[in-house]
Every structure is written in structure tokens, then in C-alpha cells.
Amino acid sequence: MTPPIAPRWVLRHPLWPLIALHVLLAVQVPVYTSLGMDGPPGNPVAAAVAFGLTLCLSLRHSLAAAKGERPAGWPWTLVALAILANVPLWWFGSNWQAFTAFALASIVMLLRGRLMLFAATVQLLHNPVKEVIAMLRDGTHTIPQALLLSAYALFGLVLYASTLVGGARLVRLLNELEATRTELAATAVGEERIRVSRDLHDLLGQSLSAISLKGDLALRLLAKDTTAARAEIDSLTGVARDALRDVRAITRDEHSVSLRTEIDGAAALLGAAGVDTRLDVADLPPLSGPAQNALAWAIREGTTNLLRHSDAHACTITLTHRQGTVRLEMVNDGAQPPSVSRFTGAADLSRTPPHLTPPGTGLSGLAERTRAASGTWLTTAHDGLFMLSVEVPDEVA
Image (cartoon, rainbow, N blue to C red; front, side, top):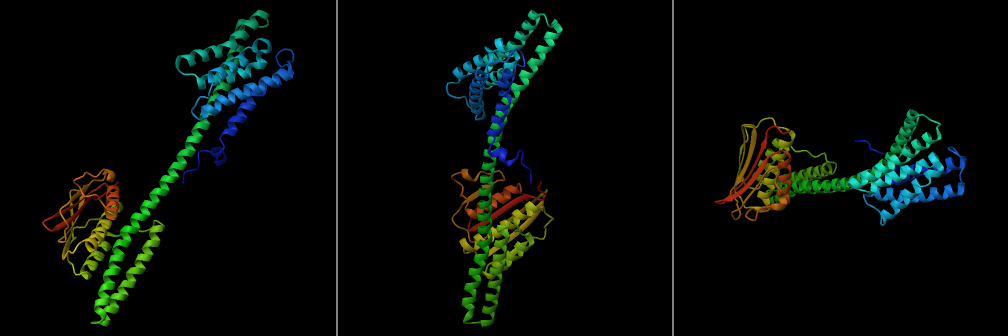
């Protein structure tokens, strides 16, 4: 099982790390300004007010970007944030520099195209150029020293802004991941329900037909041959027990079918129903799991349909192996009005052409299994004969 990409609490509450990141970056300004890290100490109250305003504006932009949106009135809030981040720089110097990262991040998240590139370039160069001018004017640094320090400030600004933009993008991706997980879970539940419904229909269809057939036969024999009637009842209870065991296996997705077993079972069941059955299955090569599964379920479905929907008196089951494919044909003489249905492994059952017979539940299950084996299936009814044909590769990837 694939481990989660992020801890579950992060996926459920991804906004808290983003908020914490904003607080940690923004708190530098009031602390540095109050302590006077670069120049004389500033007014701590004014720094705290600026901290609150900048944090609120930047969070508003980032939380909206995390949803793939832009907040209402964003041009005005972006201008306000840019003024708040850049104007005090001329008085407080590098103490105020952290706020410019919030302005740069908001520019990248809110603006588009050339306007974004222009505004981001202006924001990037504003503080480094100002620092270079100030250092050269004071005469405390040489030109190489001033350029090196401004490059360091530029690198820090890019790093902080990238962290903010990346944090918003990460929250958006986590939200999309959680939504995708929820959708995949719902899809998996739906697919499992379809599988259980299909397997139960295909399995119980034949089992219940056999139980009904043997029960009717036992009733007819009861007045004539008690021993034979008792044998049919014993056989009936055995079929019921097998069906119960198979139902339990289906619910655990452990049910498997054997082609040879299904052929023998179909011959015995059809014989008990008075259908003259001929088998031509000598040419039976070793088959891959999907191929054997598709053919075995095809025999089960064909037998069930014959017993439930026709009054056939004869049936022929043929298996042929030619040029890397295995072909199954079940032909009986109990055809209903002429119809043809043909579906390939890539068929879309929701778009059945109007001249084709739409598949029922059993045939839908057969189509799914045939598609899984990269095969095709065909049903035809003509001149009183009904044919079910399934063709699959003998080796399925």
C-alpha cells in the first residue's frame, strides 16, 4: 500500500502551516524595529500595527491563491500592501525588509503576464538599489562591498517570497490531493459494488437455475422413483452449499473459476435439464488467468441464459485454438427473434447502436471480463440457432 505523501493532519488542516509561515516571517519587522537592529529603535506600537496590517493583507492574498482564486478588491489591497512594505523602508532600512517579501509574493500570486514581470522586477530592485545608494552616499562601503551586500539582500528577498508563494501552492496541491483521494475512494466503492453485483448475478444465476431444475425434477420423481428423487434432493443441497460458499468468497474477492470445471458443470447441468449437449474442447491449451476467467464465465453465462431464456433441446460447446487466440462457441437451438450483439474489449456499453441488442446484466458482466482479457464477444440468433462466441488471446499481458 502506497504511504501517504503528507501526514493526515496536514492534509486535513493545510492552512495552519501557511499561517504559521506568514507569522514567523512577518514578526521579524516589529522585533528588529523595536530593537534597532539597523539604526535607532523605532516606535514599537507603529511596528506592531504595521505587522498586523501586513499580515492580514498578505494572508488574504495567500489564502485566496491557495484556492486558485483572487480575493475581491485585490488591486486595492495589493496597492495597500506595496505601500506599507516599501515606503517605510526609507526610514527604517533593512529592519523593514521582510515586509517587501510579502509584497513580492502577492505580486506573483495576483498579477499575470507582463504586468506581473514588471511589478516583480521593480519590487525586487527597489530595496537593493536603495541600499547601494545609501551605502555609497555614507562612504562606509566600497562599490564591491555595496554590490555584494545588496546581492545578499536580493537573495533573501527572493527566498522569502518564494517560500510564501510555494506555501500557497502547496496548500492548493494538498487540497486537490485530498479531493482526489475522496473521489478515488468513492470510485473504488462504486467499482466494488459493481463487481459484487456482477459476480453475484453471474454466480447465482446458474446456481439458482440448477436448484430450480433439480427441485422440479425431484418433485416429478417423488411419486415414481423415491430413490432417484432423494438423489436429486441431495444434489440440490450440494449445489446450495456450493453457492453459499461461492457467495462468501465473492464478498472477500476470493472467488475464482476454472474453465474445465465450468465445462463439466455446464454439461452436467444441461444434461439434467434434458438438453442434448456435445462438447468439442479437446484443443484446450494452457491459458493465462484473465483468458481462462473470461472463457469460464462465458460458459457459465451462456448456460444460465440457455436454461432461463430458451427452450433449447440441443447445445454444442466448442473450443478452438488458432494463431494465438482461443475461441469459444456455444450454439443451441432455442433462439429467440433474430438479433445480433457484438462488443470488443474497448466497447462502450452506454453507446450501443440502435440495431444491436442491448446487453443485460449478465452480458454486461461478460463484456467486462472479456475486455479485461483484451478479447471480443458476439451473440447471434438466426434460423432458430443462438450462438454465443468469445475470442481472447491465449496469453494476456
